[in-house]
Length: 295
Ligand code: GDP
Ligand code: MG
Image (cartoon, rainbow, N blue to C red):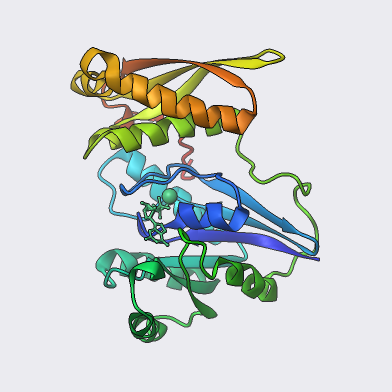
């Protein structure tokens, strides 16, 4: 039996959450093509006969321009210090940039076993993969380098077999059926937030958070009441859309996925609320579950 904690770090949008879902074989983290989708520490748990790996997904490390951003960076740093192995992800289809170097500098201070994951290899040629490996290998003393495609699930299983070499615990932290430590309530709010990300452009999704206000289970169905919170009234209009068409679309997509998650019929009531500057207000960050490790 081998077990341990492994965090996924890297700049926003390199595919950390996509890889987490592929490793665990379930959707435990929402993903989008926009940076800074992940806002909490999310654990996805991989189980097999002789191992358990708790993967810790983190918000991408970036230069913050809101209090929320600072909280997110601290979450990511905290998760580096608290695990056995770090998977450092880069986007193989993009060139190495200051964002990657920023994260790498932070890793250097941590003295952890770091495995480099070169993701999105479905977008590049074999020759380019080799070039990337060469480019990265001198930057840091990586324990291993694994090129893969998290999205196409290509070479993802290698991560598990390689990790077994580095994990040292020998207990199961969770029972074998558990694949995430997130609550159902949190997963529902995240599903709604993902649909907002999908349905809106530019800055809109970053100003949004979602909260499940009430949830009632009956034998055959579930009633969910949730709020989509924005930080200015103009965004409220965008999210509602012409004659409510956008909110309707968000609701339908979210409901389908929540039904899959819960295995029951779902009635979803969505409200849109404005709370001015919530991303810079301590009280609301706490209320919406953005835990600050500085405290
Ligand atoms: P995160 O911010 O690092 O968690 O990144 P996400 O997991 O949210 O992914 C960001 C975007 O990259 C999404 O649009 C994903 O579908 C895409 N993506 C992730 N992994 C791959 C991959 O292996 N190949 C390709 N082509 N796209 C990927
Ligand atoms: Mg993410």
